[in-house]
Image 1 (cartoon, rainbow, N blue to C red):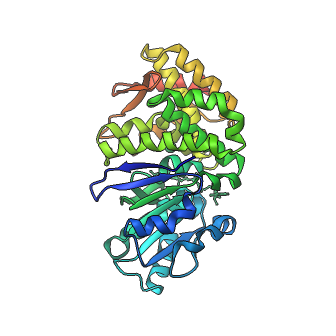
Image 2 (cartoon, rainbow, N blue to C red):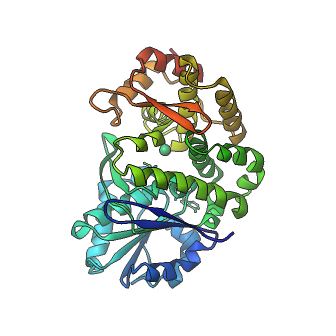
Image 3 (cartoon, helix red, strand yellow):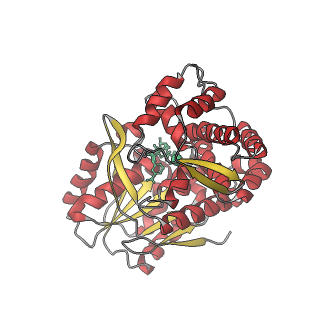
Length: 361
Ligand SMILES: NC(=O)c1ccc[n+]([C@@H]2O[C@H](COP(=O)([O-])OP(=O)(O)OC[C@H]3O[C@@H](n4cnc5c(N)ncnc54)[C@H](O)[C@@H]3O)[C@@H](O)[C@H]2O)c1
Ligand SMILES: [Zn+2]
């Protein structure tokens, strides 16, 4: 498949998202074309670098990659400091370009390190998980966790280029890959119903990581995310639709102290809960709920929720940082590819939806 190029508008300047099954092999050329260099520093994780590092030989970096651990536990200020240390040692200056190669954790923490070094170095994202390719690499949100909460420390720092190459997804553990697919379904529900059809009809090829099946999913998802963040970079309105399924998804993650679910899995549950709340309100068609239940079932088993109490989940929703001035902006689906934001959702409705998922009273 020929590479797809999508433009994103950001306050700090426009950038391109390049999607294609040999996109990494043309990275050096792309960087040259975009004037991103000549000084380049690659940052990755030991695992990702071992698997894919050799593909970055021709990028023209100053040295081999700086390696920091990934995984949610490594998403800390200490890891950001390690990147800063490496930048100091390499005499990085304002002309240096930082290239983050990894999943969402590497992207978020390296993006934050770049945002804060010399008040901002340019950063290029090369996302290597499905979640990072369809979501976290685009939009400029960067940051790390605080011991008392996820993503509490961060800043907006738009990348200068994003290069998503679906061939790297072949080495991704199946569970990580599936976790990204729930976010793809989210884009289908909120904006692009053909994605739902595509997942249903090409699932075996998708699971086989056939680039011909995966690249179109990545491209369609990136296009939606790119359009949304171009219109509303700072999440004052439209960008909220990306939170579909996330209110109750985040609550399940928080209620299990981020240990049980991959983020996408929690979003899978969160979407089911949002759809059932919508059906109960009369804004969501039953047929859409049924369709998404079917798709989520096809993607495979989700971790259990029956031991989580609705009380704990509701308390987590109350603490959600996306609750603005006490108002919950709840995204509900109104049709395949269409949403509305409800600002009057009651605790009773949330509770009923969580119980329907199988949480205990
Ligand atoms: N900035 C945003 O807008 C945004 C949006 C959504 C999520 N996020 C963040 O993204 C993070 C989750 O990202 P994630 O799901 O990519 O997790 P992750 O970065 O922890 O990666 C998951 C695992 O996959 C491994 N891995 C990565 N690429 C691989 C490959 N190609 N082959 C084999 N293994 C590979 C990693 O080593 C890691 O063990 C969360 O911290 C979340 O807050 C940010
Ligand atoms: Zn998400």
